[in-house]
Amino acid sequence: MANHLDNHIIRLIEQDPIRREALGHVASLHLPDCYLAAGFVRNLVWDHLHHKTQATPLNDVDVIYFDTDEVENDAHLVYEAELTRRMPTLNWQVRNQAKMHQRNGDTPYSDSLDAMSHWPEKETAVAIRQIKKGSYQCIAAFGFESLFELKISHNPKRSLALFEQRVTAKQWRTIWPKLTVMTHSN
Image (cartoon, rainbow, N blue to C red; front, top):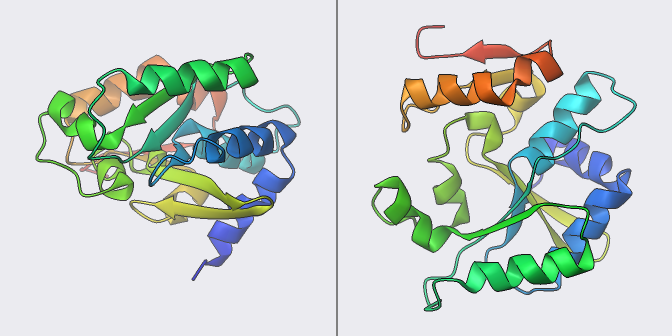
């Protein structure tokens, strides 16, 4: 059952033609357990809460899916190329989360939501997919509340140093000055 924050995200997506188009293209790939994640959703919410009239440009568009049967190591590159052909203005990053545990030194993930629960920031672990044209589903590994509270929270499954490096390098507090950075100690 979708809560009001899920619905709020969906309303924001419905007002964003670029994100709607991207969701449609990703859905047409028919990848299992597939979502547009991370900044695709997070930045949209933070822009809205900062009353930005222009969307913050996306550095990349993270597409996640979960396919334990995929044998081709470079299959994600085929999906990236197809999405780039359809929407060349976006920097597509497609990753099979069934393989990402190896890179991250974790035990295997059970699905895309479980994989997101290992990402360095809790508010980045949000995603959306098009179920059918005009119908969407949102998921979040840690819920949506802190995202709408303008927090950026360290996920203790990852090092605090990595979290702090990402907060600094991505300049989130400069782009969205109302953000509050949350570590274990605060």
